[in-house]
Length: 159
Image (cartoon, rainbow, N blue to C red; front, side, top):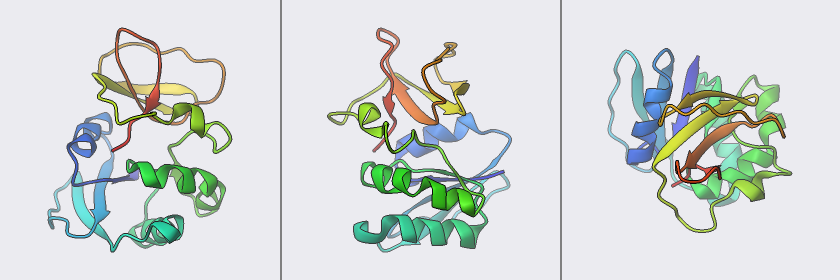
């Protein structure tokens, strides 16, 4: 599986790579990005940032690069991509975000620092950096969420 993580120039994107040791990870960002390619990961530029057409730009990028799964980390990407998830799905691209109808409850109110992060796919926790086991039954949660061990609140892991 080829996974695209946006915000590739940020340390959070690099931390997230350890959740996908058996997949090829493309770390991409807007503007200048170092041109590094290895067996398990690479860096790439998405191009010039245009927030008005972010979903269109990312869909074209995903199709061109043969992406199977998209993890948007920039906070300005989250809502437009969540609203376009069905379109991405039509091209065989899984978007790891909560449903657009419930995304507001997972958006951090301010830029928060979390001790840990967890990756959910179809309601199943596939990775937790703190090694906790999450059991969530209220919905089939998708996405990368930051959390602190002291509380059970999950917020999107954004930059």
